[in-house]
Length: 253
Image (cartoon, rainbow, N blue to C red; front, side, top):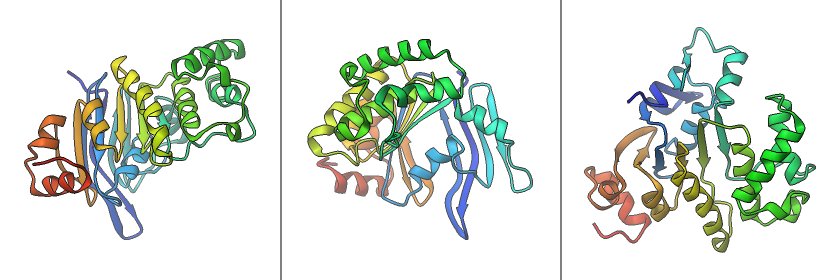
């Protein structure tokens, strides 16, 4: 099967420091990849390179029928970058909602402005998405009136409003109080069950195991190990994976 997402020889530097070493990854449509690893391992940078919020030094990112090639001599055009970003939805740690807009306005902003969707159609879809994330009664609220878990669910609805082929999550629960984590993870599990293709950077190990088709362990900008959740969490092949999993959770290996 041809992968929906294909990454080839992707590298990224900040100054003289290499953040991503030549990186290769394939993800089939409808599959969920969770990425784990210590802080500073390049997980967030990888997500930001996938949707071109960061421009890699070399390599390529292919999403569906859209391929972007990166090299030091020629950067992709702004048109190509925008086209790739429209195929992805990004959910950030810190929600990134517009504080001066209501929930409804936050969700319809991009479809109306970027995709030129009819406003009434955008509102109708936003109402459906608010029902999906369990916040149909919050359409006219402002972000400051919501809990952290509610803000993150609104951020998910906003990402879905653009009909992305791929959803990217960067530690979606790291800014939440512990009692609010479950409501966000439940929405993500629902999306996985519905066949949404997702790449999720997370520190929630049990969630990573339960929701993923494949788990990838990164360190120092490299893939150390990847495989099915049962294998990676309970029978890891690489000694570094074994140490990491044992330290960050109550897994007995």
